[in-house]
Amino acid sequence: MGNLMSGVISGVIFGAFSVALMLPMSFPDKTTALLAAFASRFAIGVVIGCVQLPWPGWISGLFFGTLLSLPDAIVTKAYLPILAVGAIGGAVIGGILHGWTPRL
Image (cartoon, rainbow, N blue to C red; front, side, top):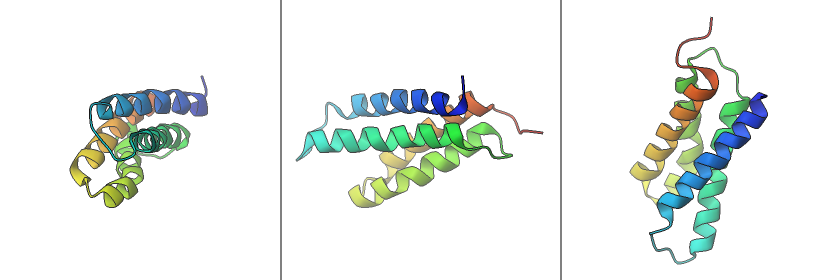
């Protein structure tokens, strides 16, 4: 399976997981909040799937998961939960798709 397809699948799974975490919460516009969360986490999976860096995969994932979660955290002012889920999810996706050790 190619990197793009692996990233898309990872993004769909990560997006669905994030939406599931948010379902019990209340928001003024819940549909928009859930769609935005899905889109953000989907993008993390796709970017990590497509990027090729000489770092261990989990570090690349941690970096991009945190970086792509930062705008949502700034807008919502919910820094810790958004950045933590993005960083952990990114690290897991990066490790699974690109490995846990440095590339040689």
